Each structure stands twice: as C-alpha cells, then as structure tokens.
Length: 507
Image (tube, rainbow, N blue to C red; front, side):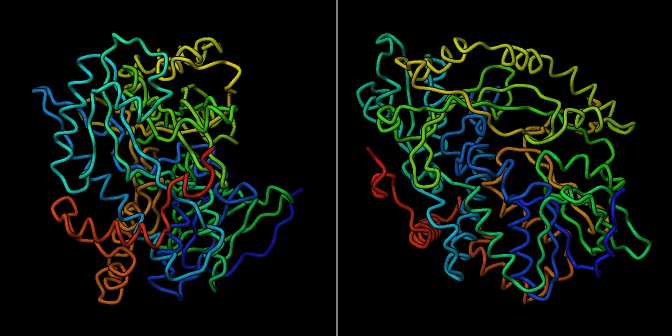
C-alpha cells in the first residue's frame, strides 16, 4: 500500500519535465520575478535524459542553414523562405539568452556546450541541384544568411566534404551549400547546466523520480498536481497558480489529464529513430560538417538524412541517420500503451483522418522498421560511398511524437512542428511536437510568458528584462544587417564559439 506524504504548500509555478523547455522557462521566470516559487517534477532520475539528451537528437543549432525542408518549393518554382527566416531569427534569440546567462553566472556545467560546425546541404540530380541553386539565391538576399556559399564544382565540394565525394560516380550531378556559422549544440549538457543554475535559486525545488498522475483545476483558478514517487510509491500533492507541461513525448497524455477544452481534438503520432554511429576514429577525423540531404517522399522531417559531426563531452563523434521507425511509446523510456491510452472520444476522428491522409508515411515507417543492416548501409552509402559496415554501429535515438489536431476541412491533420496549447485563462500550457524544438526554446518560451502572464509582461520592469535577456526582441533581424553582425559577434564572443580544431580534438 502506497504511503502518502503531507500536501506541500502552494507554489507559483509547476514545471513538468526536466528538459530544455522547462529549464528555459524556469530561468526566464526567475529572472523576470525572483520572488516566484517554482517546483519541477521529472519522472527520470536526471535532467535532460529524453529528447534533450545529446545522443537523442542531432544537436544541430537549427538556423535553416542546411535543412531543406524549411524552404519548400512553391508550385510556380520559386522558393518559400519565410519559415527559414523565422527559424534563423529564433535561434539567434536562443544564443542571446544563453549569452546572457553566461555573462551573468559562472556555470561550469555548461562550458563547451556549443561549437562552430559548418552546416552544409548536399543534393544529387539535376532537378535537386536547380532547387538548391534557387534556394541559395533566395536565402542570401537576407542578412541572416550572408556568407552562405553554393557550389556545383566537384573539386570544391570534395574539399568541403571529402568522405561524401570519395568513391562517388563521376557522372553524378551534385551540388552543395556551406555556411561556416553553423553550430553543434549539446542540449543535454546545456539543460543540465541550466537546471543546476535554477536549483541554486531560492524558492526552486526539483523532484526527480516523480510522475504526475493527476491534474485538477480548482475553483479558485489554481491547479492541483498529484505525483507519485516512483522509488517509494509515496504520493505528493502540490497546488500551483501556473502549470507548464514540457515533458516531450509525454506532454500529450498529461495535457489530456488536464481536461481543458483547448486540449480537445489533439492526438499524437510517435516516430522512433536510430543512428549509425561511427566507431572508427580515422573516419570521424576526416569529416567536419553537418551535411543534410533531402528527405524521402512521405518521410517525416526528423528523418531527413544527415551525416552529422557532433562534439559530445569534449569528443568528436560522427552519426548518420536518423532511421525512422514506429513504436507506440511516447517516450524512449515510456510504455507501449502510451499511444492506445492517448486515444479519446475527442481525438479519435482527427487521428483516423490524419492517418488516412498520411498512408505514404505509414508505408515509409513500415519499410524503415523492417530494414536490415545491409539496407541501412546502403542508405549510408548514398552519402558516404566508401562506407564500411565494420566502421559503424547501430544506436537508438530519441522518440518524437508528431502532433495531430482537428481541422475543419480535412477532419484531422498531422503537423511536424511544435504546437503550444494554453488554457483560456493562461493557467496551464503544454508544448507538443518536435522539430525544431530545442533550438527555438527561447522564442517559444518568450511567447508563452507573454501569453500566460499578460498583465506582468507589459509592465516596464518585465519589458526591460525581456530586452536584457534577448536584446533583439522586437526587431526583424532579417531586415537589419548591422544588428545581425553586432549580435552574432557578441554572442560568439561570450559563448566562446570555436571550431573542433581549436578545441584540439581534430585528429
């Protein structure tokens, strides 16, 4: 029989999930109002062990430098760069917030969490080469993409990415773009460092090994949060004025527990991932870039193939993938009952309609699930022609839950971005979805704060603090070249951005 501990005193804020989103929101709120009390609940025994962990994501500082799915081609053949501009600006805001924390606090735990790694796009075939050429021309009109290089010269591309070109058919038409300002981010290290900083502040309590079982909206507008200690079985009850659900794939089931009308109709479609991880130091040393290609038709954005240089805990790594798969788990450490348990009367129709309209995705995932080691090696060899099986091992990546939501015209649609769901009174909010996720956490949390704390957000004190944390807030960086240069110079200096060679880890 479970024991029950006494209910805790009321807190101002409850954060569910110890990932990059909760860390960002917690620190932001404490900067805006140091008197706020914050309680964090995490079902695992450490922060950032799910989607924020370095081995569970690509670690790409998503700036739209190399991600081709952020720049779709319109029916008339022109390139839509609106999403790319938005994401590039959002990542600049993230770097500003991280620089603010670095300047204000001495947190050794987050040293060397970000490094320069060139971001490159690589395409094959005349049609794709023409797409990349048009994409480059459109993007470089913006100050955010100044310095991006395009090449269809095989010798130059070989200099950029020797392993990708080595052994490649000389008759194959190829092209690439290169952006030296691209970054690799260890979001696991960053998140744990941010929680270290957060828990040192007065009024902040973190409970690991605690799973949220119930969320109940009280008559006075507060929320009752009931949790269970997964080690002892003890129950813990908390009363909060505001609740944020930032539990990655676990956010949807928790949002459903809240019973807010705004949650009605949302569903989730889990997509798992795997990497091929290079185990040959000689091969790792010869590649120094994040090289992104084009996704297969019908595949989710998280499955965009990329040959990915990482810097994890001071060591250079090389990954390829991710290979998609299907699991009914919503978290890597979740339950196979997660998906069926999430199906409710309000979302069953949107989920069925979204499924019927995404049969190509279902077919793709089935093909991925039944892949053999030879199939995975063949996919790798499209980007690394001379790849040898003995140089690579299979590793499990993170679990993503794509958003399904109601749609008046189609019944239900599958979304591949992030979705913030908030109650009408702003007392609870949940973040659903995946890409670009962590890279845009600061922008997402700034929007959440202004929506859920509207009265405080317009005060001179909070407005000044917003600008201190993110100096370019309110500016359109794409239209201000000088401000882009000033901002990037400042954040690069403060964050100590260096190349792997400068770190002394290039073989």
